[in-house]
Length: 354
Image (tube, rainbow, N blue to C red; front, side, top):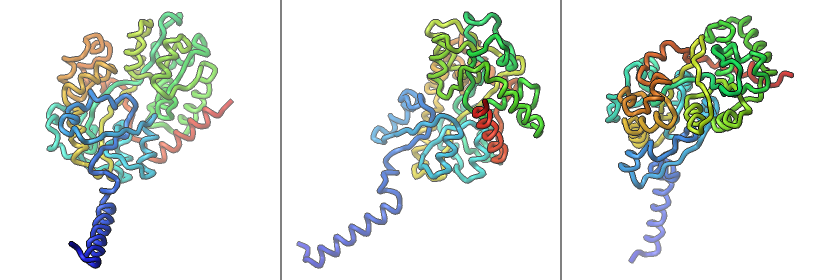
């Protein structure tokens, strides 16, 4: 039996040890769980089933964001996450601000299936910071039974025949790119005068707008109900969802090109669970996981083999077996902090204008 002095010495050692563990992060349970900063919809267990099988006792929790700028702001403010799911156009600025740690691809058993051109998009200065998962488009979704003419250009968003029935994504980047294409400009080489013209062009769109959409379920419902005839900057999943409900819609290829994107998973610098994060990514990039994603959303997968397991109608409509089609599209590109600030201010002023 311990003496009173021995008992107090033992208790003191326990308290010191507890404090040391807390300082190391164990008090928060970092080593026991995984925090994923993601888009709503990707939390489905079918996407990370292999991780669940390998780590049945590891809890996974999600925090959702509405757009890339929100995810960036969360990480910048100190939000602790083990994984984040950004557009590659945000990768460079995240790395420059020391938000991400490199990916060790040797820990990914499914890495060999990732297409090399997409893998390179996840690199900064030759270092792999992001593992691509899905690719796809922003384009125009049209209720073909509501319009006299189906638009075939980004410039058609301004056509008076659609007055009051257009909705555009509430995103400075998406809006500036779409308006630039309508004006015949290179969105990523805008002069000050051209940027001013883009702002004016977006203000001139307002009579045609029913509103700005920010959530994919919102635009899906508005198109299905017939409130919106022309949805701008819609993703392929909008077509999949609305067409499945029997609504007559067409996902067009504007003559200026669809806007294209690649998304993937990265590990924030502050993650205490890098090994678990690698296992989670490895589960996501399995052929089975990506095939589920492609069939649910109509997105392309970073593994070319997935096209063979995808609905042939979706493959044909979105060219999912031809990732080279992305080279014919207008890609979202990295912006400097000054550019992002200017575009965000422009968009705020457009929305506030009368």
